[in-house]
View 1 (cartoon, rainbow, N blue to C red):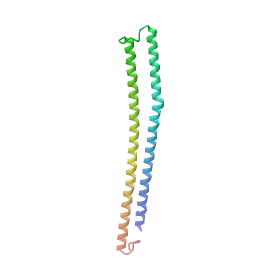
View 2 (view 1 turned 45 degrees about the vertical axis):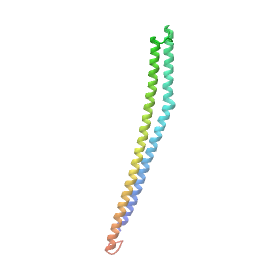
View 3 (view 1 turned 90 degrees about the vertical axis):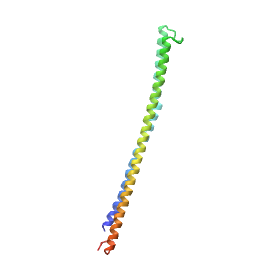
View 4 (view 1 turned 60 degrees about the vertical axis):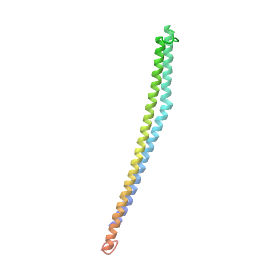
Length: 154
């Protein structure tokens, strides 16, 4: 009757594989959700904060130039070039931060996909173990039948 243990072991292996797959799928869902949260946080909190700070800095810089008595409207003067350079730096900063946010988001999604693949591997491993256990049980039953009885082997 040891083949019954093999059948139960095979069933258990399949269940463990499915359970492990479910765990990996839950981890993947959590990672995906965290990626979405980080993306929204950047878009709704960080990016507006960066842009507001840049506008404040530009305004303060312009007021300083006006208070210093220089003509900021003439192209070629140092204050104009400084302001233009600052605008370029600000645009570059926004671009870099947006790129970093996108890269982080994509990495989190890739990690989620890897977790899902690991889960599929666990489910497959469970099915293979189940098939092996069922084959072992069938072999024992066949051997038992050859010697007299499926149940006892006598």
